[in-house]
Length: 96
Length: 380
Image (cartoon, rainbow over all chains, first blue to last red; front, top):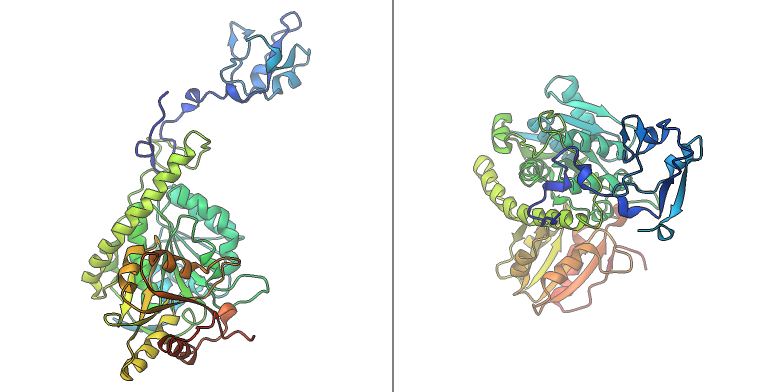
């Protein structure tokens, strides 16, 4: 997305288009990423509930992997998972 | 209509004319008189203001920010430590471009604790993005509050109107008042860019901006100060039409052929004017340059007013510890390409008396080409 000049932005840094956090990708912030062990996951959906970025989606009752474009690597999902199905792995140790 | 009021009352009467939707109040000497008077107007139903009594000045400014973000006219007033406690939120107000109007009654900062006048409180806020107007007397407090409101709401920037604690705020003076109707016609209605109460157009005011947009927002804010500079003189001319009182960025008092000029802010200008008159009667070519608008600073106007004189003495009622004092620093910047001797005098800290005799001594030393002492009225 081409960034705007100071003449083009709203007065005082105000956000005038609600719900625009979708266009603000926070994925680059993370040092650790969540890696889910599908064999341990019971689809209890607790990770989906707790994710502050709402980047874990549910499809037909099944948990999907975190959307890494938005996942900040906070580790809440791993911490909350009762089955220890999610582990936080250092970014540089993950395959890109 | 002529009436006898104190500087504090002048501020509250101007606020009454402007009928702000929200006023937040917290007491602090010597500002308390403004809110005491204004509270009476609220109690008597003379204004339709929602007066919010808060638990600190940090909250007073926060309440004004909330009200202004909601899109209504918001005002408050403070002094000294109160202004210092507001500091964080002063930046939120200017950065979010909220046209809040605040009367500041100048008082020294701790420590040592002191309730009397100097300008260290408002000078500490000179780089926080507020427009700053200084007032010599109650009349100027009244007029600056009215012009300041129009200016704030036109360029979407907050405005501070200064007056000297006790010297101005608590002394009775004759001032000329305008009719409510005339003031309202002049100030007009506030048209906010955005309003948190406009449910059809939801917005977020004051969000996070990191390396990608913060810089642009600050650049935009800086441009707004330039706009304020242009609009101010326009509004002063409009104000002259309804009041008969002409204002400018500065007041040039007997400067035409002046060789020795004092530059000052606020009530001290009254004493300097008296001395200028006396010395003029003796044939001395002396004058006063009073700065009314300190932010944005009128560099060009100051240069033009002072470029032809021999020597200038800048009176500062505050220190910038380890650097040139605030007003002297700006005057020196203005005169960087002129061949003028610039003296700096610090006076009146913590309300220390500064009399016409002190002013006379400074002028006499300038005339004789003698050294002007940097600290006036301080025991060596």
